[in-house]
Amino acid sequence: MKHFALITGASEGLGKSLAFECANKGMDILLVALPSTGLPELKIFLDQNFDVFVDYMEIDLTDDESCHYLIEYVKLKEYPISFLINNAGVGGNYQFGNEDFSVFNRMIQLNIKALTLITHGMVNILSNHPQSYILNVSSLIIHFEGPYKQVYGATKSFIFYFSKSLSIELKEKNIQVTVLCPGGINTNIKMSMINNRCNLLQLISVLYPEEVAAYTIEKTLKGKDVIIPGKIVNIYFIFSKLIPNQFKNWLIKYNNNKLMKSQQAISQ
Image (cartoon, rainbow, N blue to C red):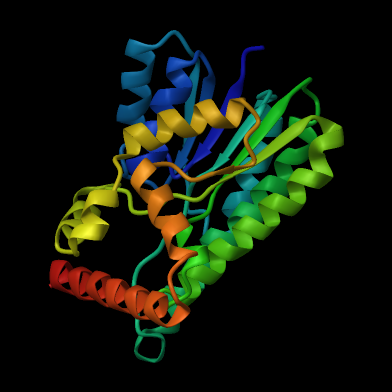
């Protein structure tokens, strides 16, 4: 079966690597990202290097009307979407009381509302195929509660619960729902600079988007429900369950504090 993938947040980092991986597997693609982030150039590159159909849409998914427009566009074009990749999201490390609420509002709008709205609009299209897939991007942070990631972690926890529940509900429609829970990824130059300023444990566990994308698409197509990429990340995850909570909480606070200071230093 030839798949048609809709990928949000497709202009850089993991989303861009997922687009390459889908094209490499012969999937047609609808790329979605913010305006002026390189989608026309990405379409040209994919057109020239892969024998697939590629379209793109430049919109801001924090706006409900843009999400509705995307859904209606797919229906108008009669694109047979069979692989929905909800990759668009925003994160960061912030002291809750000191940050303007608009930062958290955008996080909630994009990470939760847009993902839910788009998924809701695509379900009936996905159900028209013998086998379809939904890939939602959560985070390993959902298993490590700590300071400075309170809203980001909460949005990613929503994605995890939503995905796991939807997976049970949609199995009868032959829609496989997979949730990706990565650790640190060098998604762009800024994130690479932030990660490089962190401690050795964080540094050696950071992955590159190309390897995460290849592993994720492969495991999703094989029907895996939850994906945690990276051998070191998995060892760290298992080890975290064995250490005392007091030490675990101290380590999370220390790591998150390093990340926040790195983010602040890079932003200056």
